[in-house]
Image (cartoon, rainbow, N blue to C red; front, side):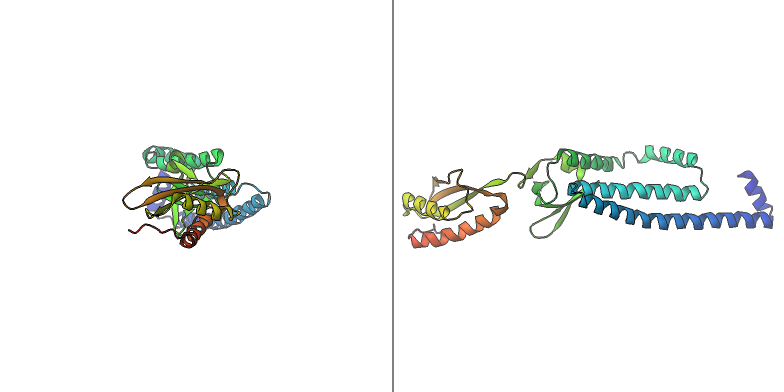
Length: 267
């Protein structure tokens, strides 16, 4: 380096031209390596992702491996470009090691998210397409990456969870089991006969073939208050039918109660 500086200040034109030419050549080749490397990284990542999808690999694992492979290849491209610039890798790695101590605390969250992503893939508390509730949000899992998991809410918002807090927090998975219990509460007037109410509800629920028959339907009088009688109804359905059955039964209850002269309590 001292010789370079001496030659530069000595204004040796031939040496200066050689240094500039070598530097510009290295920069051009480094840029070519970077552009071509990132381009090939995208092609290779998409190709491997398609192959994994065709092999019926778990979709969550495909998404995770795709993002991990893309990041690993990009790091290799950056190292190759830096090497082309003439920077010795020993010096580069020494610099990275020294900088790593300084930024270690800053990236601790990122490392935690990476570890969380591994835990999610290994322990499988949920998979792509599952409906979950976590960290105060509920929706369907649309993507699992190495650092983040994406959730699509019923109103089509996308919520991005860091994998670290997600893996270490409480997760409610509404899709993991094949069946779910649906629960309704009807507030009826005091003059309604509970026996008539129970018979009416039992009848129209028995006509719905989505209601599971292995577990009996429960129709109970939960409590009587000044407002009226609180009728609690519980039935089991397939998980995929949960939301539609809930709304359909509410609508059918309104019709059947009117036909049986059963009145809702007035607020």
